[in-house]
Length: 345
Image (cartoon, rainbow, N blue to C red; front, side):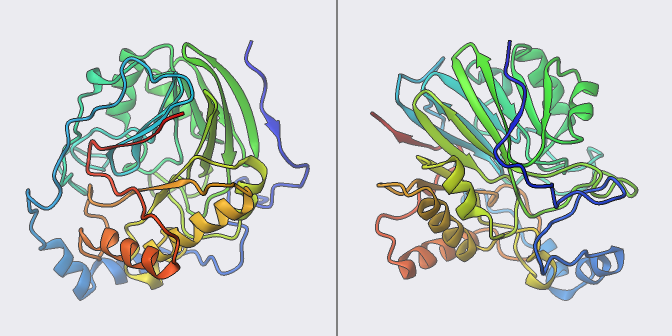
């Protein structure tokens, strides 16, 4: 029997409001309403961004070369499928993050952000999936058609989600959906061995419609299995808890961090990190975990969907510049869609 969720601290959850909704507990996190959204949506820069044409040569796609059906003992492989979707292989444990295979990130199939880069692997071409972690309920991270397909292809998979998201998963056919709050952890017995997963703080918001804003939680995930540890930040703005995550749950072998969808800053700062902030978060994760070797940085959340105002190829360029300026040594592991970052024993 799987262990029940356990908390890593005894503090009252400051991210819960009295009305049952959730909030970001850190100072300087304004809530942008519909008027602010309209101001951004009809700005000159936003309208110019919508006219940017997709360049099929801008983002090459690699045929994935992940180990299948499973990796070897002590190995770590992170394969970027696109946006926030990765296949994380911790030894023989296979974990999928924020699965999104649909053509559009939208509640309807004919409107909304359209993929610039198609998934490099079909859903039925994945190895056996032991667990799926979900960061929050937004359409570019939680896609109903993808969930339904994965529930058919991998009925044994355990789905881990922040508080409030489990009911959505169950409604789409998931047989084993489990909810966790920030700092709650659980051990899941999988076909590839035990997986310890801990729900971690993130700075974002939640909604799938006009009336459900922040009724569900958002989070990142610390994953441990097969002798390896990985941190998946989900979708987040920069916040001051990265060092605490590293200190409590590290040291990590890999940090999977978002680097895109950050402009304009007056609107996106509370919910999306810049590449420079991602480097800072990586440093704090490493320092907090007192790791002898810092984790590899695997950037995600760029180059797949056109969501905000910066050019599609700007995030990796800014990340390289920020990394060089930090003097951190070997550069981040910038993957092509379908590419794999690996650590071997």
